[in-house]
Length: 126
Image (cartoon, rainbow, N blue to C red):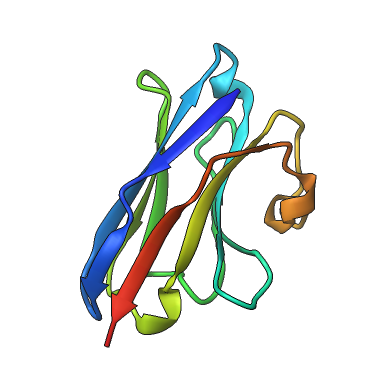
């Protein structure tokens, strides 16, 4: 599967952005999908994930109640709606996909994902 992330940009604190991740490949439905982010000088960190079936979603504590992950199976898209953005949300955001089943803990671990998009920059000004 190939992933293409888009939708990043510059926004003021308190604003919103919606990231999209377009996936190619006919087995998209069976992949765990997630968003990670990496700020300069920091490690890549989990933001949100969504399971293959059932729509179960998971969030980092830092974004819970502000961000929403969703997926459109027909369009092979995964979205990350980001509201109430803060300067500390500034980072490059990456979408990731993994065909294996991952536990609730494992899906938060970037090293376990085999497929990555190219990243999209999100900058939140104060």
